[in-house]
Image (cartoon, rainbow, N blue to C red; front, top):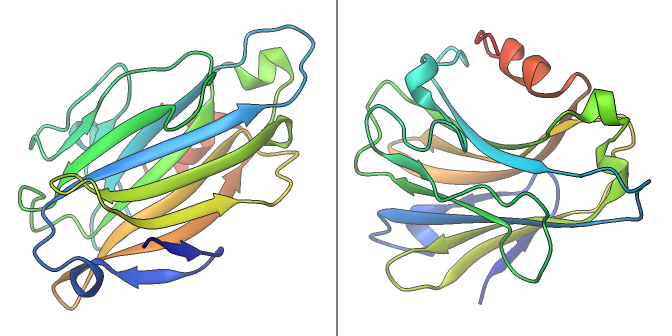
Length: 191
């Protein structure tokens, strides 16, 4: 049975799923009523070094760059509407291939063209991230983001991080106004 986390909660993946190597990160959301403008949320991953700085463009994975240079992270496709049940977008991480100098993997979602469309995460309901053992299909962790993010246009849903040699997951819910550029700029990468 999956562990349901609250914001700030942390789980040692090695303890909860011994031998875990391939992670399926399922992200989902529903949209509230909008003015009819298109509403496109985009999942991405940013790999960080021990100084919390981006390792470079090869460590930024999104719909237009679907695999990291080291091939440990993959984006499985862009869902432009978020309609339907289940995961809207999926990212995978093979933790056995993650380079040693990577200490954190941020999982974020950004609203495409949020500023020009006057959109924010306050218009999004039922946002979640699930951590699933890709080999067994077993859901290990689920984090439902429940705050009202009415000024944020990008959110870090969660992070995978290495501590004492073991990969762990933290439920984040940290938001940024300014979209993708603000998110990436915080970690030293230009959009």
